[in-house]
Length: 399
Image (tube, rainbow, N blue to C red; front, side, top):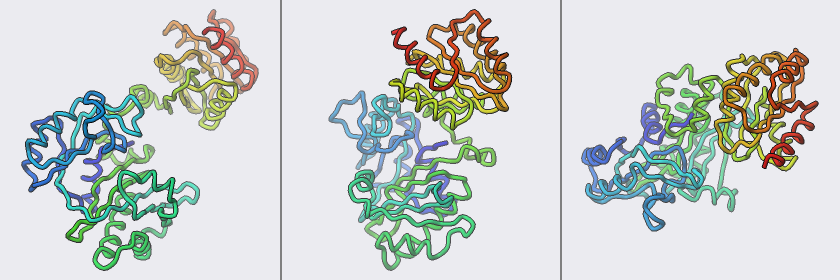
């Protein structure tokens, strides 16, 4: 689960992290009121969407010459104008794709006199089972280019969560950033605070870009992007309450109601599979046969008829879907349950696209009999390779 920048900063502040003063705003008047609470004379108006690259982004409605989603404002009138430009309009960034995201929230912060920008992030390193602290002296909007063109400027410090954050980890961060004196001490302190927040909140990723050195010698977290481990949110009800469903794909929200693992993709063949590994293999073999999957969908190992029906309807809700491939290996999952769900869903939504089903495992013959006797134009497949060839051929024929 992702949260907005202002929410991330409020969370980090609870762990003592130094951040500039700022307030969230949902309307233009609230943005002006927020600026009036700040000392000034420089204010920053920041679009709040779940995507990076806001500063270089463009608003669809404002034309190519308009400023981006993060703007400096020298007066309260500037704040009002910038808030008016942003709220309700669609911001397109390198991470949103061409569709962009509508800006419904703003964050009005106090300006900072920046002497130097740095990069600092923390994430779970799955290769080692530890926490990686990634830092660079080249923070700011072009960090992706830095990582691509000059990877030697990116440094990683690995922390064993059993050992926890130790002073030598903080010193390694400060050294990698080239800091000395009081800034050196501040880097040790802030990296420890960030690590504490990362662990205590079950974060998957924490990105501070930029971490800035101000002209008066302070280290401030100027921006923060945070995502959490969804499997741990049951023990963080306060964090779960920060969820902004308007930033999420409606289909993925619907899937979460039925505990379905669903991710929309850009292809035209819908997939319903039980098991993440089998789902990945199914998507791969669709591509191998010259087509592209429209989604990742794992119904899990113990799905009910109702859950399967919901999954099937979810796939068909995507107008890009021109065919469906169901690939089920019945271990815990029974093939007859899957078949019942497929038939019920297909009848309920008036199936109008080709459907190929490959069943194997527990009660497979009962499942095949249910499909065969359904009266629906369902094509059976003997194995995964056969299923992929058949659905690709069916879609091409239908086109």
